[in-house]
Image 1 (tube, one colour):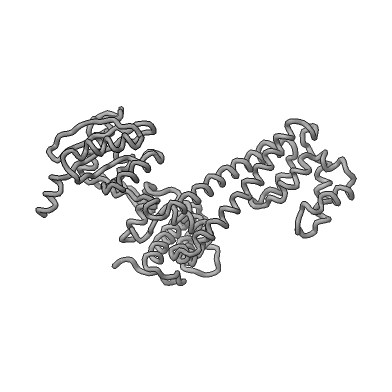
Image 2: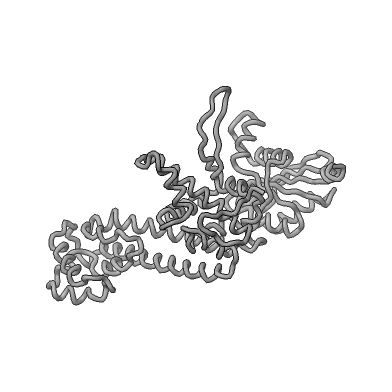
Length: 413
């Protein structure tokens, strides 16, 4: 106890309000004296701040609110100098600012004072650096996959809701499969109905034969497509117009994004293949290569969570309620954790409950047994299964065992 008190007396606290070009810092020395300083987001700025903080002591703790990725550089640099780095949540900063100043307005100096208050009261948690903990490559692959998927979805929506609506509305029925790039390749050659009907049916079938690939009943399909083109309500635009040219650019972009996504899937599986946590996660029903990639990228080392409840809190699967007097609300998900992790486990849950036999499917069936037709019951069942998947993922990685059906490792001890 005496050692802890002595450590606090010799501890210098630095509260950083992170920005893109400059960081506003409030330094509190062991004597209680505080100074404000603004530093540039450069190496010279970092060294100047460290020089100011080290004027009285060598024991330093830094706290900051994560702002985009601007905090990552200074946090890494300070950790390399042996400085303890802590994060404070944006929600905690907002609530503490209202409590301390009785107003909602903010400025950089005020924010650094709020961060210092949270650092003093222990309302922070250690900063987990992906680069130091060897998960940065995994995180970057996951982020790139996420961005490419978003861009690909937007491109597909643009094709369906704009381009096809104008130039070939009947073709939308063949884009129901999100991975059917073959039809986009077909549309590159035959973007509008006129590109089909300008040929005789037999000639069109011959020209389009290799574009369809291994599709069954290829002859009947192409003949049916020719009949659809003859009855199309598409706008009569010229095949060589700028409108069709931009339409084909969107098709080519969608195909390219699809190729990039497949390449990233292969790259991630090759890169993660030797990791034990990846292999353990792949044994869980519903967890494929990309879901495992997201889990590792967003969680880091799952073993750093000493209890599965800490991990559920990190994911946002913990239950919370509001109680006042004799009134108490129903328990519901807090949703204060990592949204992408919840999304990954939700996707895994939708796959797991459709497999033939496992404990996740049994849990889902127990939930909907009483009122299976209710959408609310189904949603709650999906959420319960997703939370169980997160709990099992933490268990198999921490205990370094494979998943076994109807047997989950207990983390209660």
